[in-house]
Amino acid sequence: MMSSRTPGCCEGKPVAGGTAPSFSPQEMFIRMAAEHVPQHTFGRHKGTFSEWKERALPEVLRTLGRWPEAVPPSPKLQAEWMDRGVRKRRYVIDVGPHASAALQVNLPGDLADGEKRPAILCWHGHGLYGKDPVMGNAGSDAVRENIRVHNYDYGHQMAEKGFVTYAIDWIGCGERNDALKPHFLSTAGDRDWCNLYYLHATMLGMTSLSINLTHGRAATDFVTSLPGIDAGRLGVMGLSGGGTMALWTALTDCRFQAAEIICYSDLWALFGIRDINYCGAQVAPGLFGLVDLPDLQGLLAPLPLLVDIGAYDACFHVDNAMACFHQVERIYEAAGARDRLHLDLFPGDHAWGGHLSEAFFKQHLATRCRATCPGGDATPQTSVA
Image (cartoon, rainbow, N blue to C red; front, top):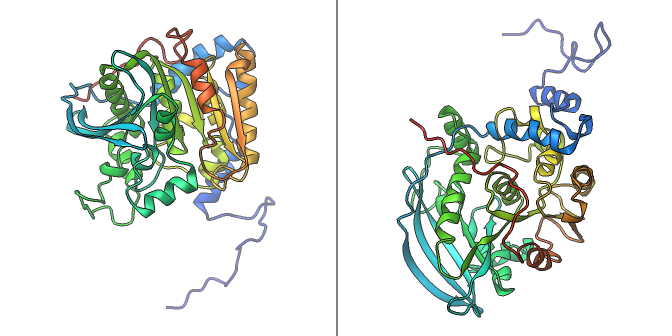
């Protein structure tokens, strides 16, 4: 049937009122985000840093929703082996109701009996391989290439430098990817499991973040019970989506004394809404209504923070990343903690810079004390009925 509509009528042409109509929902969101000013943007706050943080942080943490209840880890040591001077252990632990995860612990080869070392939780970013490249498990050409491109094996390299490191897969990645062996689920089609898990979680009053943080906390609870680990000297680091997890881990778990956020600095209106460079594993309902990403990072202050930015990063453009960092810098200055904020701006793409990490964690994990807890003394663990 022929349409009576005149071809091209009102498409891209100004109408009465002056602006061209847009039928694009994506364009609608881009324009809304460009005009949006979050409620607790630090730049519009007139009081002190402490007053801003006291108001903003509780509201930000509430966006995570309910947390799965904690469960006993019921650990099983599956294997132990040496790899280029690092002793590696694989455990299977329970991390939440109806959920288990493979946990890898990398121990420095020179760790002596009775000695305790600081430990670093190493979160991985998005990708098929999960924790494997991060922990240096170069078992295939594909994983070796993944490590080379992103300088991705910080969990192995930091163990070589004397730290205990540990990692699990977050939901949807590595051994917890429902599309891969042994699950082989095809019900999602070509949809992103991260987004589907977010839909499931919010239907239950949770978020993917609160679930992954609970699972990371379970791994930390178990690792800090092991001999050789100083539970009072913990750090966290992660690349890209792992930077998201490092940020939220440090915000919600007071045991961590220092954090490294690698190639996860930008502005949500740009990398998130404009570029669609985020997923359900990184967000919480109403979060951008409260803060932008620089504010979220700034809420860590005065916690020691190392930020890695790749000058040639195609994922988080250096102009936006530096704009984010300068806003975080202003927050740390207001907190009287500018000396605790460090930048590794390196000539590389979306990768771990690695130039300052060893010195940063050695400095800030040298003692067991911690001046502040960004998320309070404990994050409530609310179970789902």
